[in-house]
Image 1 (cartoon, rainbow, N blue to C red):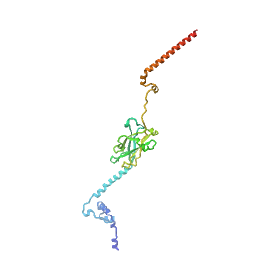
Image 2 (image 1 turned 180 degrees about the horizontal axis):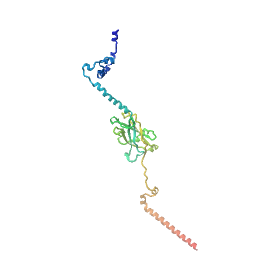
Image 3 (image 1 turned 90 degrees about the horizontal axis):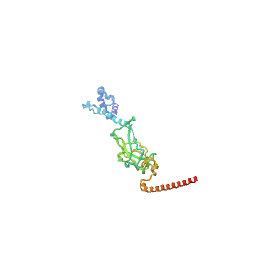
Image 4 (image 1 turned 60 degrees about the vertical axis):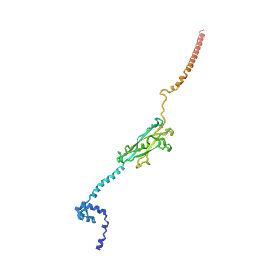
Length: 287
């Protein structure tokens, strides 16, 4: 019975090899002086012979690697967790003009809008992520009415870029903003007097970063007109309208003089005739 009990103990068969290795380093290097050969009785299973016991040099690589890896792993795990609490959004930092005269100034006449990516840290304070971590954000622009209704796809061509359209609508690391120059090629009167506005959003098909948190932004409403109406005269228009054009004065000046002379002669004859009638009447009263 004693031999059967001694041979059936399964303790040494369940001993993990990794645990024996680490426990050996721990016990031999740190506690050998205090517990000595009784370490096996405290742990509950026999320990592998130490390097001192075998006469081999003790390597400090295992003991030196474990402390140095702890702060590095802590830095890697803490940084993303802290950055994950940051927020960001698109902001229009320069609005286009509220009126646009599309037929003035030629094709160089354009509107401008500036979009900026702003970031806030976990405290809600303005912050800026490192440039080497920033991924460029392409944008796209859609045309809407002031009411919030999207302009039909067939009329989206009313909006037209000025300059290099690709480079102008990409937010890049150095500036974190995009300046867009554009024109609107149809007057609001042709669309029942409705004013237009732009919706600026991330181009999900072109962007490689996760930008689901960036919501679209809208510009102010823009009234598109043709040209400014300038008055023809600064003075009283009623007087100016009655004046004949210069060509008419030169051409008919002599004819007008003849007509005026004839009228003057006729008036003179009538005055003479009336004077004679008055004199005759006075003579009758004297008699």
